[in-house]
Image 1 (cartoon, rainbow, N blue to C red):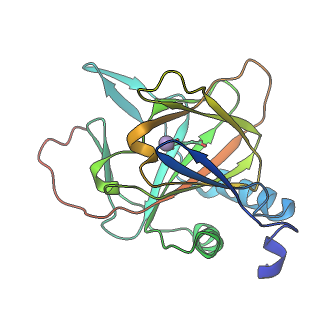
Image 2 (cartoon, protein in one colour):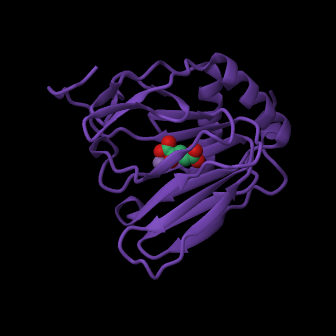
Length: 215
Ligand SMILES: O=C(O)CCC(=O)C(=O)O
Ligand SMILES: [Mn+2]
């Protein structure tokens, strides 16, 4: 694929200032043909799994499929589970190159999510695992169905919830202290929607053995 074909006509980002955090949004970083092709390849080639998490001592299946890819050693833990990085697929290296060029930063890993339909979701959370460092830089590429992405301040209830409709081919960059002050989610939808794949590039800044690894 020709590199220039990957970019849409207007790759300029929008800066969205939030109290205590920064968001940068490229509505159409990737042109539609590449976005559609990548969606199909990722749905087929990624080692999708329905992970479970432990909440209040109970093991539950998460309402989406996911997978963790990255450089050797870029492992990741949350809710008592360790995710060993799978080596990059060629398509992920291609996507990473485009995302790194836009953001001006390198990433050593990516968490992929597959929302099979509107019943799949991710609940309120911050991407604040210690592996991601003090102020994580998270670049989130969307492919497939448009889904609302919502942000809510952790303590300042007077601040209204923000909603961004994440378009296919768009990139959302979360940076600064955003993860300290805001939570985000991708809610379930009552309407019929097709699949959406989200590739969130991250940087695992240290990787050390931990003793209490479950499962
Ligand atoms: O699907 C999205 O846009 C958000 C995913 C997310 O927040 C995460 O994987 O941590
Ligand atoms: Mn997140």
